[in-house]
Image 1 (tube, rainbow, N blue to C red):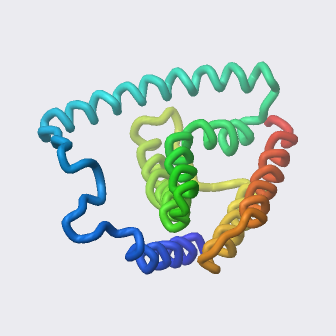
Image 2 (spheres, rainbow, N blue to C red):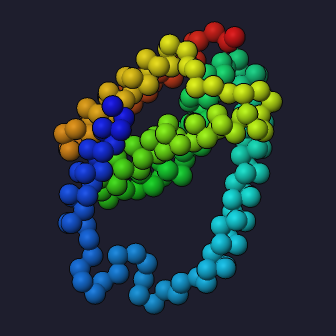
Length: 191
């Protein structure tokens, strides 16, 4: 279902892309007088930023664990809500910017692309890596509540992206679904 809705949003994105393309002779990104970085500078900058993000992520995880214990949050709430919101802040900023510019195709592509990437690549890779570097092997065995939430979220994403149009009440519906999930996970007793 997630793949089908992603495929439809990508097809819609490609079909609606023609009205946003630059005219011949115009640059679609950057400025005409803007210099490009040499490849070595770009790669070193990328590596440096990656290391900095890893360090900040480590500090974030340790501070979130302390805060979660202090505030009595369940691990499910921390993982599904707190880490998801903070970890996707850059994506959300880009998606909000695209939506503000009336680029719904880009907005949907960012949101669904990120979800598909996590579900189809990051999750399985982490499971495989857990056998090598983890203290104990991880599995993709989820509790039934998480499976139901994923099913509802996938169905909501499919319904929203199927029409190719959106309105404020559709966004409100998605926010209400997320609030219900967050409240359910917050009230979930800690193991």
